[in-house]
Length: 486
Image (tube, rainbow, N blue to C red; front, side, top):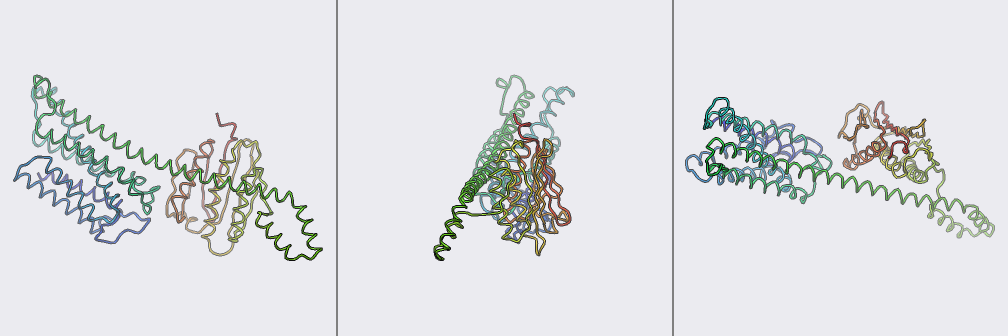
């Protein structure tokens, strides 16, 4: 009884840490600030200690009631889970859907991992005693069952700790702790897990009332009946764990891909619109001679009011000068817009970009790269106080490689390598020494860099991010496109 209570206490402690990490500080205390890890200071949180204490006391009371007033196992099991869920809903300040998801995940660990370990170890011990000790009808002793229970709870604690480090994207957008997902998302994940928990509890109740599987009416003996029953529980819980894992992480991956696809195509639409604007500007430049003749005629006739209207029409038509002639009209249009924004913010703009057709890189992919990196560079410059803000960009073919380097001024925090939110980019071709984001909307920044990373990996290229002495540098090296595509 004491050892079982200790094992349960360890499980509840891990559950309290998990809830503190993803549901914030207890509702009885102060809610964590956005961007912090609320689970880091469990020993300082009176609310979490209260959750742990009340959960453990309620467990002891329910177990005592079960010993004094024996009743159906499933009744006390459901009561334990109900009290656990009520305490989570009452003591943590997160929205209800997120709390339901946390409860369902923790209950699923208890309902799947512990019976799986119990039955698996029981099978091993029974087989050993039957084969090695030559006991024809082996039964597990009380101390053996106690040790198995302790080991099972220890595994459950390890599983909760493992989950706490990997389910952040399931609870928050992009893993950012201050950007929760929708209530519909939480409910969609929580309900199937709770259904699985109920089904497994019913199966466990059946096991607690006798042998679930009997070999032809018990003709093969108690040993084989126990082996078959425990094996059935192992298979059932193992398949349930697989189903729950594939469901949760599969939906999270689908949601991530949908968000990235949405931003990807939204950027493509913007770049297409900019290209159309650039084409209108080019047509206007082509007709400039005729516009000058028309203005000269109005000037001779001293039609000042008409001249003013004419000039306004030229301005509204998109007359812009000093274009960046890169060899790609779409990239020209993109750089034109970014250059105007830089001048508006008094950011020094230096651009030397040449994109020959021999690069083999599609304009769509080039716009994804230039657009996201320049957006980040402009926002980094805006955070720098005083004069001397700059963006320096060079790009061109070096032998059979396309080389792009963008340097921009940044604040001292990034220069020292201290970041607010680390940006994680998948892919072996991406390296970062100080890849960080201080952007207000961190999720869009992270998705932008992920889109750049996807394009780099698509061409089997490499990307390196560095920050040093107030300068942030992005270097991209892409093999010629037609040499890597199949």
